[in-house]
Length: 186
Image (cartoon, rainbow, N blue to C red; front, side, top):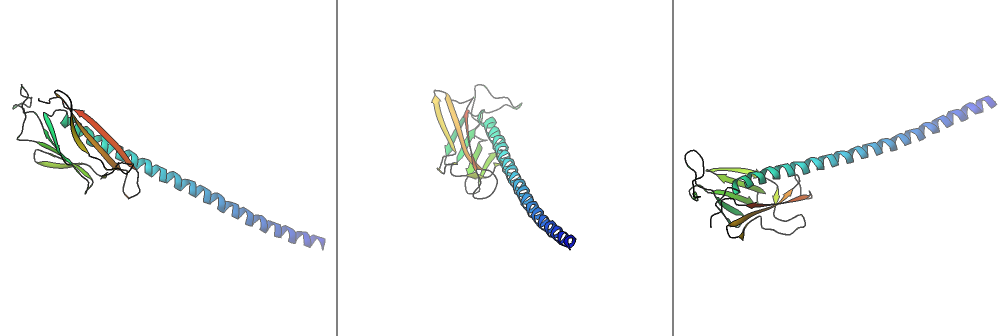
């Protein structure tokens, strides 16, 4: 008799241990899955951040390389017209520097489509997407401007607020580029 009672108690306690172990396993697995999802979300945000940084860097680099050569830059709204120096048949600048008004380059920010576009030699290319019309703090801004810093020293400013990825609630990055025109004519 005593022996049977101990067996039933042992079986009952094993069942209780199994239920407790199962419950603990579920809790541990839930915590692990939650941690994994958090890591994956952060990884995705980092990828989107790096992509936005790299894309904007490349677009601004290309705009800077063109604008640094400019004789003049004029801005009207969200469009900059860049006048490059005239070149000879071998591609060298003519001296003294002369404006090539027949082949202007246009850099345009279109907030409606969220694009930065470059038009050169009749070809239009999109340099950057995901541009928004407010800074990360929510303030409107002017993306393109020109300023004379000193006699013969002209600076072209580009300011862009770029979304990291798609969606309304994604973070925005702020970029500013100040380009001194090397060939500015007075």
